[in-house]
Each structure stands twice: as C-alpha cells, then as structure tokens.
Picture 1: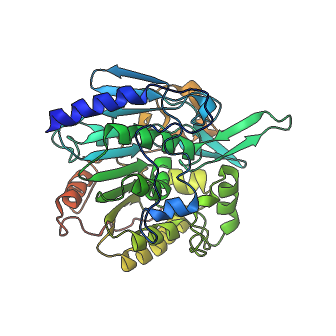
Picture 2: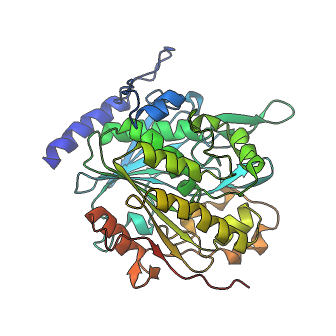
Amino acid sequence: MKMLRRALQAAAVMALSLGCGGDATPVVTGFQRYVPAAGSAASIAYTAGITRYVGTAPPTETTTTGAVTTFTFDPAQGPVCMHGAPYRASVRDGASDDLLIFLQGGGACWTDFCLAVTAAPAGVPSMDLLRTTAENPLHDFDVLYLPYCDGSLFAGDHTVNNADGTPARIHHGLQNLSAALAAGFTRYPHPRRIVLAGSSGGGFGTILAAFLVRYVYPDAPLYVVDDAGIGVARTGDPAYLGRLLDDFGARAFIPADCANCTADGNITGLVDYFLAHDRNAHIAAISSWNDWVISSLFLMEPAATFQADLARATDALHAAHPDTYRRFFYAGTGHTTLLGNATGIVGTNLNAVDLPSGFAAQIGMVHIESMYVRAVNGVTVAQWLGAMLAGDATRWDDRLEATTPMP
C-alpha cells in the first residue's frame, strides 16, 4: 500500500514541477481550492480570505538528494524570503501514513526590532524532532519541512518599503506557507494523522497556520505542538501586538467574529477560538517559565512579568479545553526543546541573519533544550509527546514544573 502511494506521489510531483506559464489564471498544483461547509473548522481560513494563495505558486525547481526532495519557488510568484531570496520547502518520506509539518524558528522582524533569518536552505536539517531513531515518537512520519525566512511568523502579507520605494522587508509568510502546504499536499494528500509543530517563531506560527492546515486537510486528526511560541506578548498592551500585525499585514488571520481574540495584547485568544471550533484537534504547549529569548529579547520585559502572563493566559486555555490543551512548562530560561541546538534557529549561514545591535554580547543567554533530556517529574518532552499520539491521557497530562526564583 505504501509503495503504491509513493508511486502516485512521484507522478504528482512530476506534474507539480511542470507548467508555470504566463497565464494570469492561477495554476492548480494538485490541491484544488474548494468552498468548505459553513461553520466547519475548515471554513475559518476560507472566510478570512487567507486561503487565496494555496495552489497558485507551484515550485519551479524540484531536486532530490537521498530521501529528501526540495521544492524551490519563483519569487516573482509570491513565495520569497525577506530580502528577495527564493523560498524553499522540503519533504522526506517516512514509513508510516502520518505527516509531520514542521515550521522552523528564526526570530521576527518589525519596525522597532529585527532578529531574523533571511534565507531558506534546501533539505531537512538534523534536529531533535526530525530524528529517524526510535527514541523519537515521530521517527517514521512523512515530513514537510518549512524553513522560516521572512520574519513574519508565517503570517505576513505585506511589503515594507524604504523612502525611495524599494523593498526594505518583504513579509510573505502567508504565501510561503501556502506554497509549501500545496506542494506537501501533492506529495501527501491523505495522511492518517497530522502533527503541525513549530519552535520559537515557528511556534507562534503554528497558532496561525493551524487554520490554514485545517483547510488543506479538513478531516485528519490534527495535533499542534507549539514549542516556545505560546502566544503571550505584552498583556495589557494591544498596541504592541497591533504594530506587529500591521507591519506583517496579518490582521486577516483574526476571525471577524473574534473581536476579543487579541484585545488583551496576546494571541492566545486565537488558540481558544481554534479549539472551540475544531473538535478534531489537540494542542501541546511547551515552554520554560522564564524563556529569556521571548521575555527579555523580544518582549523586553522582566522574566517575572512574562511568567505571570504565561500562567494567566494558559491557565484560562487549559480550563476551557482541559482535554485538548495541555502544557509542558519547565523551570528556567530555556528556549525551545524540539531543536536540540541553536542551528535549528539561525541555521549555519550566519550571513543570512539580520541581527540587532548588541546581540553578540547577549548570545550567551540563549539556552537551547533537548526533547530527549528536558524532563518534568521524570517524563521527557519526547515521552510526553509520544503519550499524546498514543492517546494516553494519563501521561499526556498538564505537566507544570515548579518555578524557581529569578536572579
């Protein structure tokens, strides 16, 4: 059965790599856009208009190295990195009929601050969640890997220009996400289960991308793993979040009937909205209580403030969705557990990273955790995620480590 599916996928990929003519009509790439049933979970993205790019930008180059196939997209058709470099996404076949969609981290960039990766490398990197060894509960999943290179948390649809009209920052995260999902659908049209995971900027990205993934895959059970991007921004300061949404051009992600989704200055309201409308989804939220990268570097607020806001926002989410929203929060200032090392965030090409002034003196504060080592009460992140996928509600519990005093 698996071999037959692979043969069909190969034929689909060949068709996908053909035909990028000059016709103004969008090219159908294997994913057929449709009108979902009113009130369905899939209708949320459609009603908001954020499905408009899915299937309109097929890859112009497809290359295979070993078990990994990389799709490269034409910047002129929309998918593009922040400074104009081509966008790429890669797939790796596994032995199961399950699909892992991984959104890489890599900072964020807006008018007031910029730390962001600006290139999309080919291939699937070596990192904790993408290991093919048995200790990884997702080791046999098919993989769709999305690099992150436009600084907009996979949600942008806006270009910020310089005074002379030239692009300063191209935030095309929505088009990058859409192109990759369409290419991934062509390869893996009928997964048994889907895990949508992301770390750091990609963790924030899962909150927004979940709506679009549900549109592309309306029926599959969906497990969202949000690692170090829980959705807490500056509680009580909606203007801060508003500046990001406007810079990114991402306000379309806010459903029209969710006026309070971001009113408190966070985007955790979108998580509540998603779970309230999608009865076939679970969310695993992973964070340290005092994540230095999120609290000090990006939010520029005391760790104690971040800790209190994190507790307040996620306590409410777990209370509202006790069976489908569960946390793995550990003590300390660590940032991410699914990557295993810092190259998972900034890659290996440091020339393709925009860094803020003075960051070199602070880099020692960035501490990357491992899902195979970081544990709370004797259970590692890897074991906890395995319990979620196995339907073991006893071990996939709301697991909160006691906090420690901050210096």
